[in-house]
Amino acid sequence: MKRFIPAAIGMILLLFLASCTTPEPEPPPHEWTIEALGETIVAAGTFWEDWWSMRGAFAPEHLANENLPEHLQHMYTRLLPSSGFESLDDIRDYLLQHYTEHWVNVELSGVYPPFVEFDDVLFMQGVRAGFSRSDWETATHTLVAQDGGHAVVETMVMHGAWHRYPYDDVGAVQVQYTFVFIDGRIRHVERPFS
Image (tube, rainbow, N blue to C red; front, side, top):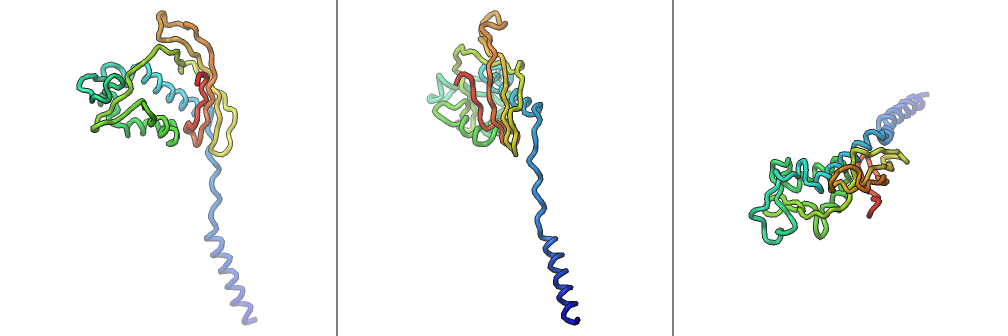
């Protein structure tokens, strides 16, 4: 009996310690609503349409073409701090709200990236052509799949030659984009005209 009591106390102590050190189960991955994912798609698409159309933060009043470094002339224009962006890190931080780090790294690199920084000055690509573009205000979204932190959304949006006059639906068609999300941020986009 004398041996049984210390053994029982030891066993109870071990069970108590084991219960204290057992990790709690991880919370299930966040489930994203189609409304939240759709808002991310529209915000991201609007950023790029503003950039392409040189409106909003990228409007002429936020641009300067004088005193450009020689290697940036004819392709880039200076983006002034009045735009709300003062550095490439500001652009990156904004995009990381909507895109994964991998996506941002790919899009901000390459031969002619949309934004560059030189001597602590931010520049954006300023050359444009009259391509047709998507009107993100017309977007409708369908959640195709969601598992863990991954989600797939199909987005239908009107796509047309908005740069032409008159601005109504000149050759506009409805096109589908497919967005792949990781933890609520865009990881990949399948574009209709890639």
